[in-house]
Amino acid sequence: MIALAKRTCAVRSIQETRICSLDHPLSAVGAEKIQDFLVISPDLLHIAYIAQLERSQMVVWDGRPQPEYDEIIKGSLVFSPDSQRLAYVGSRNGQQMVVLDGKAKKGYAGILTDSLVFTADSKRLAYAVQSEGQQLAVIDGRSRRKYKGILSDSLQFSPDGQHHAYAACKDGSWLVVEDGQEHSPYQGIAVGSLKYSPDSQRLAYAARKDYRWLVVCGQDEGEPYSAIGAESLVFSPDSRHLAYAALIGSQPVTIDGKFATSRNSKQLVVADGIEGRHYDAVGGDSLVYSPDSSLLAYAAMKNNQVMVVCNGDEGPLFDGIGRGTLLFSPQGNRLAYIVRENKHWRAVIDGAVGPPFNTFLEGGLVFSPDGLHWAYAVHHEGQAFVVRDGVEGVSYDAVVGDSLAFSPDSQHLVYTAQTGERQFVVFDGDEGQDYNLLYTTQTRGIQFLSPQHIQYLTLMPNGEFRLVQEEVQVY
Image 1 (cartoon, one colour):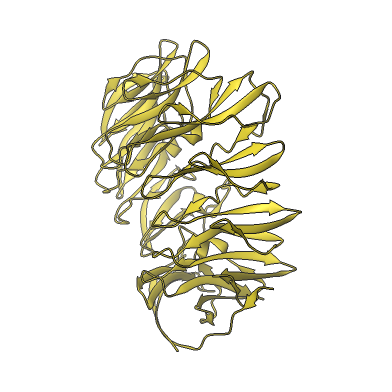
Image 2: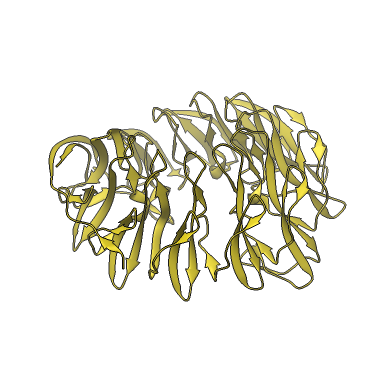
């Protein structure tokens, strides 16, 4: 039996500040998700959206209309990490141009909308463009060398903002361009594989050579394999280690873009050039280092069952492991993940298997900053609730799974819940004020300003965005 939490009593002082109103009709045609036409800054204090006018479109930034264009390209709006700058792509007279801080840059035949990227310090912007049948990168407003093509989603800055790199096609081959210097050419560069180390000193990627795949790190080439998991490349936090998933044997078929298991092939993890055990399959996007860089964990399949492997040690077998759920505590001494067993889902924390539930909600499990507490949200038998340190919270119609957040001192837990049409923030079990719509799903949008002071965004029925700040005294 799992323990049930008691309701908490609290005094909550609430202050609401108007951010802006949706005074213009939203342009949502062709959008696949809300973020394609409406974005919220990381600090929650700024909002931008695409507005539809009679014959044109414009961006409205914090309620201020920006210049009109024939079209604003959906999905192109991006705030800088410091929330002070906004960039997007506009179209006018058959040309597309990047608009940065309200000012249009040079027009081109096309802009690769998913290429807009700021440096971590928000001072620099880069993007890729189409010009005269070729493509080129624009860094800090300067056009760089033209190539036949630039690989989708490859343009990026190093963490310190001092370096940039992208993959480009030249003379029938593919190569990486780093700070304007061309690397050796290859038959191909894997999409999504370019990765800088956290200290910005190393760049790694997967490349095709002699019809096989290998990982390039700096000037060094790794061993060749039948395939490399492009999304699997991961550096340790201290930048000293590099790991990735590889495939040996015949190429298996792919299902939904993922390698399927095959009797004629095996998959393995390569860490610092050393091959791990061979498995039927490896979760390429599951590789994760502990914060202190001493441990490497990943999911692997053997005989149609799945386990977690940590520094070569195999854990117990399960029917499945939740994608992207492997998580180390901030101190690196605890490991948690979510597994499927007998058609139910369970959390595994420090090797202990928790109770079964119908579904784990998006966001998975979260640890407190001190690593001593944990929580996750589930949906079970028609109700949603949060489990905190093994104790079930109050049941609701819905819980926003990726809204869970612990306070900086690790003593408090908040999340968004819904009962009927009511949405509210739960603080240590205490239900806050009802709102029409809470925006608390972007990077865990309930923010702690202090251990007992939180802020979040709400959209009022009249179309007004408000920043809600609460001071909470629990007793």
